[in-house]
Amino acid sequence: MNKSLHRKRNKNLGLFELIAIALGGMVGGGIFTILGISVAQIGLLTPLAIILGGMVASLAAYSYVQLGLYYRDEGATYSFFKRTYPGSHVAASAIGWFIIFGYISTMALYAYTFSSYAISSTDFADNIWVRKAIAIAVILVFTGINLWSVNGMGKVEDLMVYTKLVVLTIISVVLMQHGTMDFDAFMHQMAKDAEHASVLSIMIVASLTFVAYEGFQLVINAVNEMTLPEKNIPRAIYTAIALAILIYVVIAVGALFAIPAEDIIRDKEYALAAGAGKVLGKLGTALVIAGALLATSSAISGTVFGSSRQMAVVASDGYFPGWLARRSNNIPKNAIITMSLCAGILILLGGLEMILEFGSVTFLLVSLLMAIANYRIRDKTHSSTIWTILAIIGLSIGGALILYYEFTHKWEQMLVIIGLYIALALGAWGFAKRRSQARESS
Image (tube, rainbow, N blue to C red; front, side, top):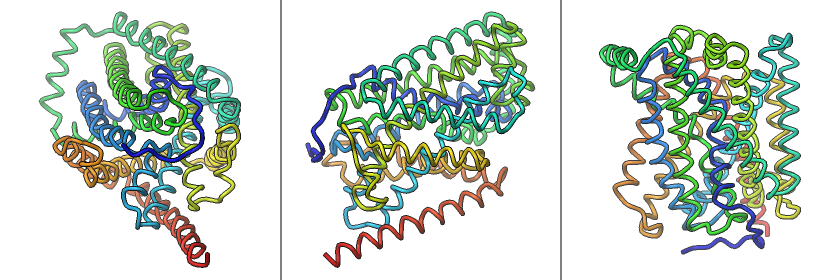
């Protein structure tokens, strides 16, 4: 097994902390947004699409796990690609830039979702600048926690993640018990939706749900701070994905039992809060808000933790400014602060919906690249050829379906996404060229 040469490891994170980091990165604002989109297209078949999306995420996770066990490198996505294709400096720089800015966009989205729910029942609900101020403030809070200590972050993440699982489960069960639809009516309506929904629409929604599963790869970023990586990497990632599927299905079923489909479509990410308010009054709304705040908080914390370490690795290779690679007590403080500042800037500039679409396409693309990289060295990673090929096929189809959906529904956003890719590609090319020139002169 190939082991990377890194700093002395302080192994503070156990299995429960690692599962919490993965779930923290996954169960954020995504499920609240996806629910409305899914119901609008396939109605009560939404839980089926969520399960299919989780299966695609599991296929993607297979290559991450195998590459993570082989390389043992906290640079994860970036490092796996760079070390599998060592002669491609521009490509390595580009994937580093894309993945880091994808994480920055999700941090901004999670913080914005946090603030939206936090003030949803106050007089400031429609005040855009109060919303942005709270979003930036919550990023600063979790920046401080991550700068404080690895162990402290892990314990806070444990508390938030496992508490939010309990809260979200309670919300969903209560909604099902107090809903206007019983089980027989639910199954009857599902059968009717199955008659009208096409296989293509179900697959498109399943592909779109991949957004809600991004974050499991954050576990690998903690390889230098975890105990027993050969056991805990696969256990943490697969357990977290399984729990995420269960959570999403329970939330979706609870919402569909209690909230009319037209209300879910209209309210979108606020559908759960609005529906709970109608069923349970102020208590229901308060529970949903609490669950949303916990979900987004842990997502911010987990993303700051994992992505900052990946940014430090990219910087240490010369594809970002060198000062981003500096560490104190094994914590990449400059990278943490820089990513948080960038997320804050995105929040101030607005247009987060487009940035979210950029992040969604990016994470599916890089997952496909990881599957291809794993296939290339499958003998070294001891990977199953069948599972790796299935991952490549599944992720390729998923990517094609998302692009089809974007071009047919939001082609203006696709143009902006393409523009972002061009800008990031130019930045990556510039740093790759400078690094090559520096090596030639030395």
